[in-house]
Length: 351
Image (cartoon, rainbow, N blue to C red; front, side):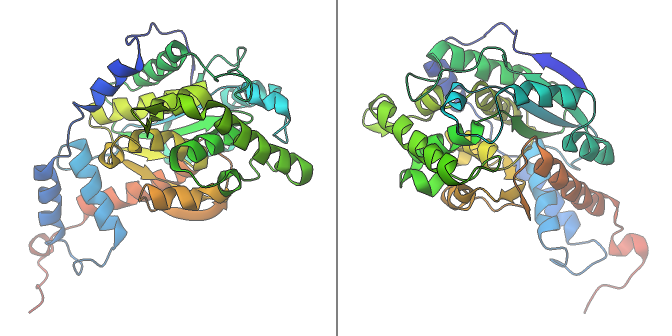
């Protein structure tokens, strides 16, 4: 496992430079997709009999931009950061748990470590300035624009040549509060629509969490808009966290490098929706791994038109759902690439 921290030199200077990258996002490869579909018609099975596994094989080919698609070097990236809003008492755990969990990742003792071993996936954990949390967004913007840009840039630098599938997750006490506030700011409704139990809060603490989400969005609402439209990067700056910025950066870099992306649960999905808020096609290279038990996840996935691969009543984070979904994608591509055709197996085709 790799142990990284946020010390990279920023390559971009402001949000406008990031938005310009969106304009040069590559499209999927229709030729590779068509080759996958053609072979699928010849495999020793009735067409469509593997259902979504077939669709996943097509999706991998078109976003890797080659045929056959492969999963030989999957990368699981977990970004960890602390949130100033945690001082409002919105989590079941104190802020120092973020650093303690990162150490647990390093020592191989977390859930994601076990899942990565099972899937033979490379795990990398990136410490996003844990000792210096974001600001409490009930008092001021969570980050300056430059700090937000720097964290996005760092996330981009973690996507290296040779990776053929990217699984993204997060760790950060109070980041479901941040995610709930971001979703509320981006898509409207009410704070209660987006706010769940997170690490397991209830009662007065949950009521406080809802109030904090509402107050944070209300405080910064006028700073979210450009020409009357809510701007995703502004929302990220005012309500987000360094680890969520890094996820946005990794998604951007994945698109530019033809690397399909599996997104973990609710909070990572909110980070993904920052790009969706600019154009719905900007996250076409992303899959959502599982449906979180966080109340806002169903609502969010409906808005961004994404169907999760799994529904396991999970809400752990740390890319656990993304690594489970990796196993399904391995099955999809192994069946597609390894099955014989009717002619190869000398089996008669149907009349």
